[in-house]
Length: 222
Image (cartoon, rainbow, N blue to C red):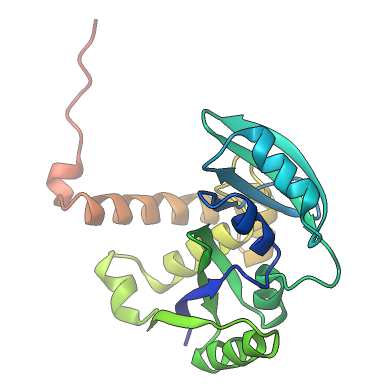
């Protein structure tokens, strides 16, 4: 059964350990979409010049480049040195998916999806082998109740998960609807209808409205 694990990892000994030493107020958040073989990381908590001085001095970082900025945070494409402990790669090695990752106060917090709890145990042991000290903050299974509470059918749930995994909801999209339908072995029309029904189920569930309330009144004309 698919499980979600929230894992805290000290940044010391990983690719960003030196940065937190040089920039104590640094915060970091993973960017899911970036056109590179490296990692897209939003860095904040100091000036761009101080962050880049720290990036330049960090022995664990092979290359970096600033992609864009958003007010007081900066998106960097970062590649770690081959000998660096890369927590993202460790998760991938154990067939896991990093759903989100952030770091502050010298610690990483990763939300990871794995096939079952045995993978969490293997991932934990692997991190210990790399001389980091992981802490399992939360661990739970994606039970059937989680799906049915949102009003989703099994196929709708599986389709949404596949769409997320293949980057359908990213900006820009990493996969077209036709490519996703081919991956799921269903027609383009069937995928479109299944997604629309899933959206409706999620919206009515999250907004706590009935089917009657979900029916919008006619739009007023100008």
